[in-house]
Length: 496
Image 1 (cartoon, rainbow, N blue to C red):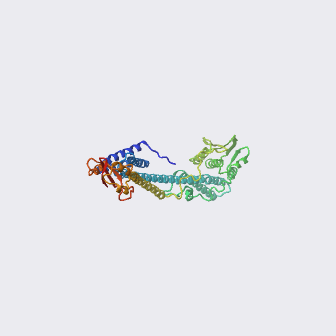
Image 2 (cartoon, rainbow, N blue to C red):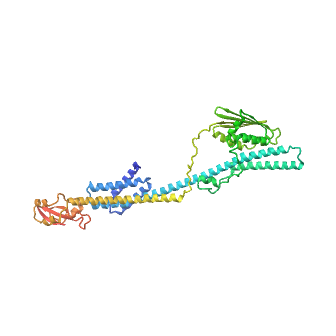
Image 3 (cartoon, one colour):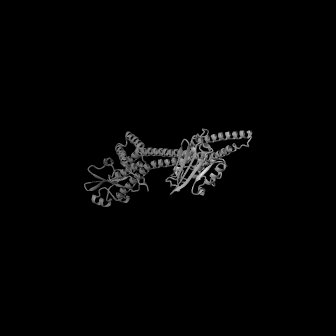
């Protein structure tokens, strides 16, 4: 249950409004004071920051009115005039202004929330788009790049056959040239996918789960069989293409434990691809071992003496793999010397647990997100608060009127002079005899001005008392009084 929080500045402002309204009540007939009260009410409604202030102000005005009614025994008509003045010219403008301000704040808050979710949706779509581009680039680089390198080795091996005709040699040379151009185009495409291509200008999808469905998929043959192929089979494939590989490992079959799609397989394939591209014909040495809870692997090859193939690429494949290895708690280093190239991998056999693993369906996006729905709901909440703000002063007015009516009935009931008793009274009766027929209390809810006006027609030197003729507040005679005047120990006047 939400607790009502009352802060000192709210109470101070409400008390100030109450004091101003009370001052205005002294001159309630003055339109200037009423206008001033209205201006102050609107000003307070504008500057206050919480809707609780409406409740506080209304409670203070209502409590003060009831206090004047019951404790100070004020005349009901004056109290009612004062209450209407305070509520209509002070509390009601204040509450309406406060409610309107709250409604505006609710709308702004909803608009900010919608905008924040829209930005989050856009960022998530862009992130999904970038991730899909990265995945496609990785597939192209690892799978297609490796296959093109193997094809290049096979073409170079074929070109060494002495039985080839000149026309066949030219055809192989042309194939090799076109293959190098394809490798260059592939490298440029991978670079664009990894770094350069912007996200689409319009959202791909309204949800993160389906954002990748609309993005371009890689070719159906790209990376086919990678998950089933092992690192050992990857080496066999390279050897069959003419790559000379020497392996130092306790058991070559240990490579069967690592799929080609694993980090070990990807590093192995990247090393072979780089050796085929930049050091063709050189022996690739692979050392694989295990040290306590981590795998250690190194790949080295001599660099060619001619400058045709010595230039290494941009290293995007190694850079991408290095980030992936470090994310698993390992390390990947590339050592480039004048006559040798080496790749070193250390990788824990058990991947570390991640503290912030993404959870399924944790995205703030949803296909049913509709800004108009939330803004409409916020508008309804604002209108409801505005209606409540307007209802509070009216409820306070009803409470005060109810208290006045109840107080009038109570005093009238205790000072009721019944019709048969009034008829039995006659001028000249002794005061003692008359007192036995009269109620115990006289009617006190009459102002001094009304009492003075009523005594103007009384016999000189007499003392007058007032009694209610009916306690029914809905009767036409409600508020009518009987005046009995006494002088020299007898009843001298009876008036209604």
